[in-house]
Image (tube, rainbow, N blue to C red; front, side, top):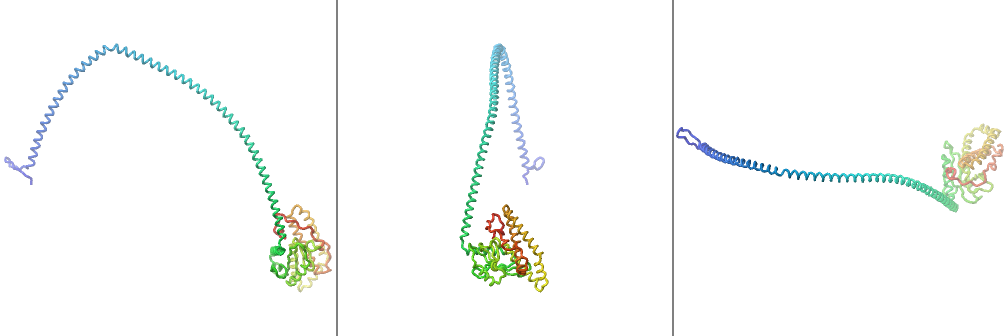
Length: 429
């Protein structure tokens, strides 16, 4: 509860804090009012002093203005003269300066025009020099180009000449190496050369007659070199051919009896001896004492003829078994003129082909080789057929002079070297 006091007059309770606050406010208000009055008085005094000072300043200013006016009035004529003099001097100086600037500008303009004329002249001179230089350079380039072209041409010709010389030297060296290799091959052992020939013969027979059975006789064993079991297209056995290959420089008559013994031991129907050297009197191929002897050049044709004859003989044997009438018909046909005429036509075609071959092989060696093979096959087939029929009919077969072995012998000159690019079939034997 706040502290209170009771008024003795009205008996009202008054809080002590409220009374004190009111007293303090009243006291402070009095003090503030007193300070404000003092401030007002000071301000009034200052304003009064300022008014007095302003009056003094106004009086001083009026006095000063009056003095200045009087002084100006006194000095004005002199100042006007001085000002006019200074203005004249300034104008004269400015005119002189402008005159100098104008003269300088004229001089600069003249120099600029002279410089422009000089520059234009120099430009024209430079253009002329540039055109002249371009013309000179173009002429020089043309001369240099011609010289370079000539030099390049000489170098190319020299290079071509060197290349041709190199190629000629290479060809000469290769020919020398080929000759050396041929000499080395010819000096090889007869046994090694013979084995190589046997392998080539075996490979050739396998390629030519894929239906046949080609068996090589082991080295050192008796019985020839190769046994060829002939089969027709149906796979039937038609006979056996015994092959012997020789690769020596000299012919030996002792080869034939040995091969006949080997033929009997192998139970072969035909024995064939192929050799690089043939006996005297035999130029291409022929039958000597029951053994067919052929050169490597005629090997393919003889093999085809013998095989075809064996197949036809086997077919004839099979067809004539139990058919006597057909034998009589065949005998009648073979003994007649029709058969003779047909054989003569074959021989005439053979001779015509032979003549054509001789004329064509000078220009077309490849075509010559192909036709020669065809010619050999035709001749061998015809001779084989004629021989088979002669063996069957004996002396009853009409004699055809052109089919005698001596008449159909080929030229005796040795076979020429095969040219580069000949077929594999033509170059094996």
